[in-house]
Every structure is written in structure tokens, then in C-alpha cells.
Image (cartoon, rainbow, N blue to C red; front, side):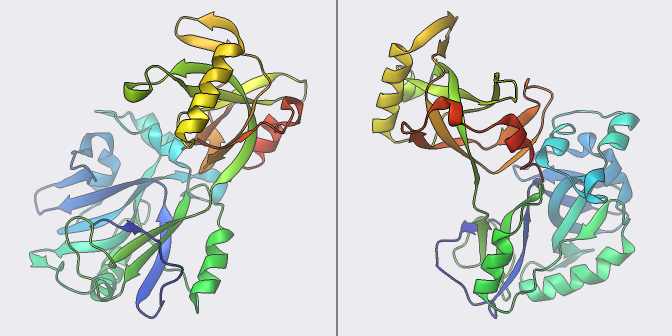
Length: 320
């Protein structure tokens, strides 16, 4: 069951329940009397990457939830998506990997309880059933996605606006009487992502795009300043701009190239790009030690001198 982006200005919270939208990967855990398997949203069997989860479930049920990794800096709560990435895509994991990046599932729905199909029931009834099951599961591997208590939509909007936890992606709104159905059905579940963070960065490098953009320099690496005045890369983006802005950016790259490295062009460090992103986290892949999640170009700041772009230290303060 998938959610639609929220487009309405408000919803009636007597009809909808609110809970956090967690920034992990959605999974279904299928527990039978003989074994437990873990499946991604795409239907891939990822049990081999998360044997700690599969081995912990001793309940005959099909559960729906968000796969996350615990974070020490948050008192054992969920860490950022970057921590989860250390476990993804591995056919097998070591004991040290499981110790360094302990996985758990934040449960928010139940499809089957033993042989009883709960999908036709209202969300409220399924939620009540799930609440009776979670206390009997391994607390190190499973917990319950808490509901957000808000008297009205305006209060909920304020709560959402103040959420900057690295593991929170936004708010889910679930119709209280909704059955569990396949695919995406209008007006049953909504996802309301939090507003993005922004930073003013300096374009450093550019590459040609792919497909229709193969003749344009449309992939941009950008950076921020250190206290010593060095520009360090903090991310790469290739979306967010209009076709007209793409043409302008392509011309800028071609006329301001100062060096070439194969398909990559280094440009004069003079153009400021306002970059929107969902979160930022530590990264060993970048010299700056930082990486943005879902960066995109939100504005071309032709009015702003490159020397006034943001700093790496300023970005680091945004880490939740």
C-alpha cells in the first residue's frame, strides 16, 4: 500500500491519523512457522543482508514497517539513512557490521496475523492488533511507529516544521477507516514531506547529462568554503532547474571552463547555486566530510558573490 503526496491545504484529523515518515527503506517481514523472510518495497528478498532481523522474529505474521539503523548519538533511536546504506546491497554481513550498524524495524502495519487476513479491516483495527503484538517482539529489533498527537491540522503543521531529526522524512497521514490495499489509492494514505534545507554553494565542476541532456552540461558538483578559504565539494545535483535555466547554465560552463579532466570540466569558481536538500550527514567519500541527501538546484544566485556562499562549518551544524 503506497501513499500519495499531500496536495490539499489541510485534512481533518478526526478522519486521519498522523505518524512520522521515517527515512529508511520500507520492508515487509513474512514470518511463518518454519522461517522468516525480509522483502523490500520492490519485492527483493533482502534477508541475507539483515539476518539479525529475520532471526529475531518468532511470530507467525506479515508485518509492514521501516527498516532503520540505531544511532548512538540519538540515544539508541534511528540514525540517518547514510548509516543504513552501510548494510544495503550486501549478500552477507559480518558480526562486526551488525554490531556497528544494528538494524531494527519500526513497525506501522500488519497484513496477516497467523492465517488471519487483516487487510480488509480498517487501519484503526489493524493498528490495535499490531499494538498487542509488538510488546511480545524483541525490543532491540522491533518497535512501534508512534502516532503524532495533534488537536488540529495547524498544530500538526507546526510539529512537522520543527522536525529536524535525521531519520524523519516528513509526516504520514492515514485514513482511520482505510483497508490495506495494493498500489496507490487516492485519499487513503498521504505523505507530507518536510520542507527542504537550503545552502548557497559554488559550482566547481560540470559534466554532460544523459539521454535528452547528453548535449548539455547538466550535472553539477558544488562546494562550500572552509575557514581557510578552500572550496570543498559537498554534493552533486542534476535537477531542479527549468529548460531555460539549463541552457543558461550550459553556456556558463562552456564560457567559464578553466580545466578539463576527461568528460569533466572545472569551471571558474564564481557562480552561486542555491541547493535544496532533505538532510546532510557525515561522509568519508567527500573531502569536506559531508554529503547531502537528495540535493537539487532550487535557484541560480547570479546576484551573490561566490565569496559569500555558505561554509562547510555552517553545513555541519545542520547535521541532526
